[in-house]
Amino acid sequence: MAQYDVYPNPSSSGSTGIPYVVVIQSDLLDALSTRLTVPLAVPEGASKAPAVLCPVVTVKGRRLHALAHFAAPLPVKVLRRPIDNVAAQSHLLVSAIDAVLSGF
Image 1: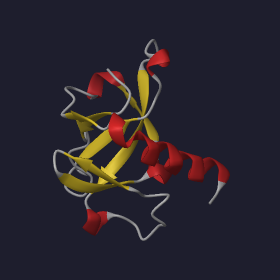
Image 2 (image 1 turned 135 degrees about the vertical axis):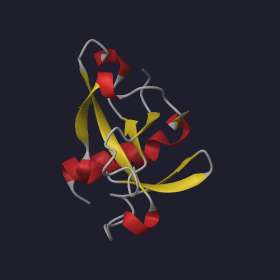
Image 3 (image 1 turned 180 degrees about the horizontal axis):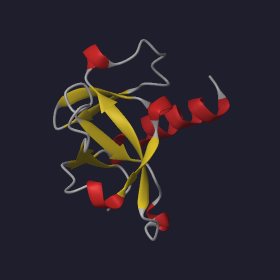
Image 4 (image 1 turned 90 degrees about the vertical axis):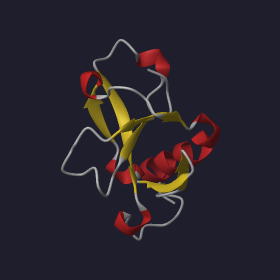
């Protein structure tokens, strides 16, 4: 399981508006049974938060908003198979998490 891997949302009730989650946790913490994830929401379901907090991330050609303020750990066992990796866009995710921790 690699950092910035994208997985289908394991919550069937939220998967319409939030089809994916992205792992932001460092690979150095692979021994843990959870992974810190950020939900990736369709634009219609995204909040009106500033772009630095909810940047647009492209997954398989689809533009989604990363909801950094909803970052949460998920059990490894619910993350089945990655469908993409967004490491090339990691600067957007790191900046969003920094905005959550440090403010704008």
